[in-house]
Length: 222
Image (cartoon, rainbow, N blue to C red; front, side, top):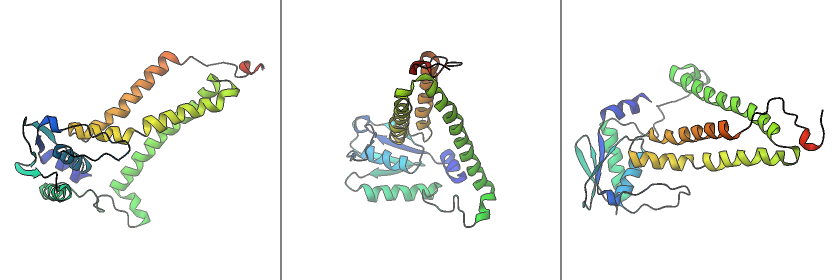
């Protein structure tokens, strides 16, 4: 998204608010209702992929969103109207619409050969390739680590803990990290930290299974 990349570098956005009014935006169930103007303002900016800084204003009763030097007071009593005005100002400053169909648009089959579309498809292919590189050895390792009587559980439990809990909470945790810092890339530290933790646990606690007889624990040996 070249337009977004350019806007991040050129449009200066900041949130001026009392730090006491700025809480965590962690919302895993999507049921929280943010009541302070600081939380509402940061939520609006983070949803629009806006990079911003936090300027503390101790004791201030209002939250100001500053876009290239122009101030917008966030009215917590009218969040929809205030948010719309801020998004309009952001687009006027150079930020693209979040739902702009012209960013990556495919109107025909051969559009996949356009440079931008082909690049995105190639990136997704590489990411899926990394997943396949993990799943093959993972299944074999779990077979070697656990006997037949609990093998189904040994495959199911780590899969659902990893994908269900750590993976399922990724959107909520990453969004909260982005909203807390104002950096749209800061949420990437969550999967990086999980990957590092997994590597350390694997190296320290998982035994070597090379040449292990998988039938010994079943009372058989071949």
